[in-house]
Image (cartoon, rainbow, N blue to C red; front, side, top):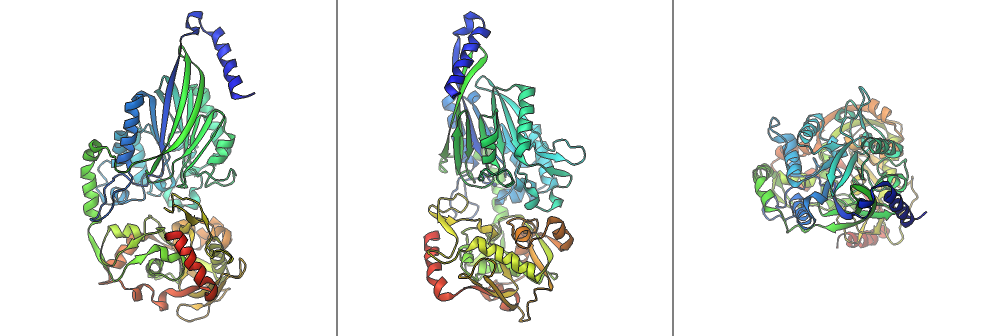
Amino acid sequence: MNRHYIKLVTCAISLFCIPLGLAFAQNTRQLHVVETGDVHGAWFDEPYVEGGRTKASLMSVKYYVDSLRSAVGADNVILVDAGDCLQGDNATYYFNNIADQNQPHPFPRLAKAIGYDAVVVGNHDIETGHSVYDKVSAEMDAIDVPWLAGNVLRQSDGGTYFPLYKMVKKAGANVAIIGFGNPNIREWLPENKFTGMEFLSLVPYAQALIDFVIKKEKPDVVIVVTHSGTGIGVPEELESQSLCLFNSLKGVDVLVGGHDHSRYIASKQGMVYLNAGAKARYVGHAVIDLRFAGKRLISKDVSGEICTIDKNKVDWVLKSRFEKEFEAVKAFTNQKVGTLQSCIRSRDAYFGMNDYVGLIHRVQLSVPEAQLSFAAPLTYDGTVEGGTLVYNDMFTVYPYENELFVVRMKGSEIKAAMEFTYNMWITTPGSHVLMIEKQGSDRDGSSDWSFVNRSYNFDSTGGLNYSVDVTRPNGSRVNITTLADGTAFDMDAYYNVAMTSYRASGGGGSISEGAGLSPEQVSGRIVTKYPAIRDMVYDFFKSHDEITGELINDPSVVGSWRFVPEDVVGPLLEKDRKLLFE
């Protein structure tokens, strides 16, 4: 039975169910649903440092949404966000960690001022810790912009830790907004970030909760917002279950995804899926045509699009309301940190030894327990210029709030993790050495070529001397010669490896799939934990008069590594560099 036939049947039945005088009192309305996601603290359009560029931000999202509200009527527009609001930018770091924590957090006020109807909890929101997200959640509830995550349960009683849904009346329709967080939190964060909480897979759990809301509230329109990537439609892929939901959910009109920072749109009979990417560069916009007979909804059609946000069009009233907050962040991030002898660039990390990741290795290896270090480029293509550094540069060097874990690993496990990582990074030489493909990517910022896999998982290993033979098959590419101090590397010995809390929790797969260590095994192997790595980078700069390349990549500490054979990799790496960055 096709969609049009179903509509005709519905309309015919409606004629017999309402008084004759109302049978022809039909009217149509349009409900507009606008979505953002993975804004990651892009609240302000102005740069924090002199010479910086304006950027897409919530200031421009407000301009876009208000323009739509003016055109179609504010009562016909719903605005939702798919999560990761409290991490990723100078502003979020400042208000989560530095500002007076006895004062209200600015994000709830900002969300209310922009006119969000509901927001979803993302994994990086949980990363801020109980003291931040519990406070923000309470403040969101107080202003009736709930922070939703119906699949996050309290371990104490099995109830939902965050609200499941919100009902709104828009365009003459009763609308249910149902929200779900990412179920894969345990591979992102250490357990101290989410004590007392359990995260359930969205498949099949989401459908049961959607059915519950539909039965209880009898909504005309159902909007489901998830902090889950699009994926490939496989329910076992906890990280990205949105496409699987799109293919299986019943009773949903608009499904919103996020988390993977990649734009995606799909539609089928009666349903549209939107994922607008990240950093407020785009919004998803769904239009639902509603047809009523009297007060009874008799049919609806849904369509959608991804719209580019013009970063130069901002809401000046909103800017003025939050000018004090912007200036506070600006003052903090312009404080002097130290001096860097010459510029470092994260793009160099994909081709061999470099100062960018070398700096992170140097910092991680500075803790007394660490013998080796796993570290990846966390900024895809960032540059820190030589000269005087300010705190703003710390966000380029280390954009995330990862903690440092030191984990005891066997030599053979370390090599297995390295092999797994390089298999995501490189390919057997043909046209390329790096595993790249021609595709646009919001996450990487490339308009043409980008990595197949996420570059923040490309760990090199500090504290070893080794080579990676690109001509050999997976599992036999890494040749470890010695430790950085020249002593032999023993496959049967145990070493203390410094790594991010994300990696130790299984993020990226090198520890879980590569080394074959379960979360329980890793938990039993943790030697020590340190606070945020960015703070350690800051302390490293403050403790040295000048940071030089020789200090960063001291071979007796960091060791060395390279791709081989050089006559093969040299020309191909140069070709790949041009494709990625020129």
